[in-house]
Amino acid sequence: MAAFGKKLMYGIFKSNFRVVNSIIMIRLIQGDITRVNVDAIVNAANSSLLGGGGVDGAIHRAGGPAILEACRAIVARQGGCKTGEAVITTAGQLPARFVIHTVGPVWNGGTNGETGKLESCYANSLKLAEENGCSSVAFPNISTGVYRFPKQQAAEIAVRAVTGFMKDAKQVNTVIFVCFDSENFAFIRHELSQKGFSQDEIPG
Ligand code: AR6
Image 1: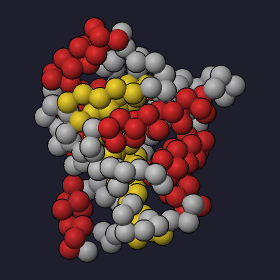
Image 2: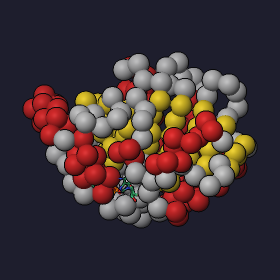
Image 3: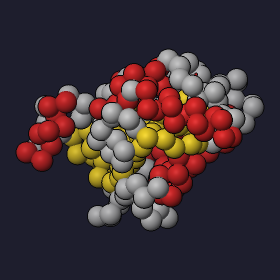
Image 4: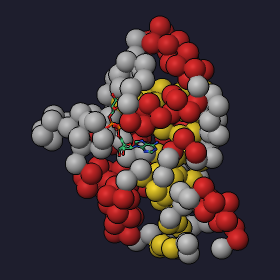
């Protein structure tokens, strides 16, 4: 209990899934990703990389102008970011060291490769985290806001992609799913328990 005191103070820490072996940890919390203290937080961006609403807006607001400046430099170099791909920048004033910007698919009925593209978002973000020496990464529920991806399917894909990647990860040992809303939280919790992850409910 004492070990979790700090996180409870922030009011964002609801549940904790302890996984498979002593090296890999997957956690689930409900709250604001801009407040999470990890090496890298993932942003659900758009292909312009120049900001927007939702979690993207929250990250740019909380992190300050250094993030947009770094995004502009990437745009100048490579002209944005394609759906399913990811780029990495400073996290500015955020507690994280890096922001990994990935572009989720817009839901268009499910017959336009949405599943594979969402899976790529998770895999490419984790790959960038590995390449940049990150041991902890926090994800929002990519594409489940403005981009309208059905939350249950998105949760299934997110958990499958992350747990699949973590089996062979060399740098990343902790992934935190940061759900803003209780629906996404419940779907991710369900998927994690389906995968046999044990759950420690944190009192309070
Ligand atoms: N922390 C964690 N999750 C959050 C936060 C936050 N502070 N704020 C919102 N969410 P969305 P998308 C959740 O719309 O669907 C932007 O304008 C939210 O509840 O942010 O991938 C971009 O610029 C939802 O579950 O991203 C793009 O144009 C999840 O984050 C477009 O939206 C994703 O919702 C991307 O759409």
